Length: 308
Ligand SMILES: Nc1ncnc2c1ncn2[C@@H]1O[C@H](COP(=O)(O)OP(=O)(O)OP(=O)(O)O)[C@@H](O)[C@H]1O
Image (cartoon, rainbow, N blue to C red; front, side, top):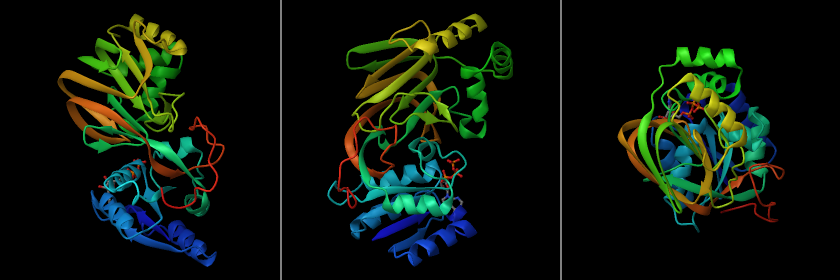
């Protein structure tokens, strides 16, 4: 049996209602629960696991998926249902990079029937995330202005100048520690990726895998002038392990400490932190994902249709 946990914002969408009725007609056993406020999706996901539901489907945006993941992680691994995604948000970064369909009917069918694949679940202090955590630039604007970051990181010199003028961006003195490394820097942006893209389509950690037991980290730092921003963009093309403005590395955990509170996003949800620790639980969740999904380093295993 599957249970759809639907963000109340989308509960009355005709396409969603039709998709549920169509799946039932096709023989799927699916119940629906609707959220009213923050916290409901996590609670409903936990409850579903306790009641023996085999697959929970998060119907909403990245924020709903994140809450459902947190609810599932409150359960023991034996009790933890598999996770499907019905993308109904504005950004849908995880769903898009997984290659899930975005129209309600095929998305619901995929969420119910794609085989489950083991994924790692990172945690920032006491809150889990599945896709990405970002710190600093972009974290206070998130998906509302996704093009800003794209312009800065990807486009030509004119838009770079435009972006710099338009943005009164800040650098934050901070220290980052991980096993075998330490970096003190003026942080422009830090991305900690289990998945690859955030902020509505920005591929900040383009080589990350959901199942390698590791986090892909991108640190952009010390870019206090236009010349240095240009140098950063140049370095971004090669993503050095340790550059003047770009550090890119993999780790299974890290600690971050800044002198002041900074904007942070966890799977697109905003918060503020002065410091935090990130750890990862390898293979902690089973996610419905396409067999040819590029976010995996290992091929799918046969027979993983039910509980995690
Ligand atoms: N019935 C409801 N009406 C309005 N908001 C709700 C309701 N139930 C939950 N929420 C809020 O919705 C938020 C999650 O939204 P979600 O991320 O799923 O959608 P989105 O913001 O449209 O998508 P995206 O993150 O992709 O932009 C939670 O923070 C929760 O507080």
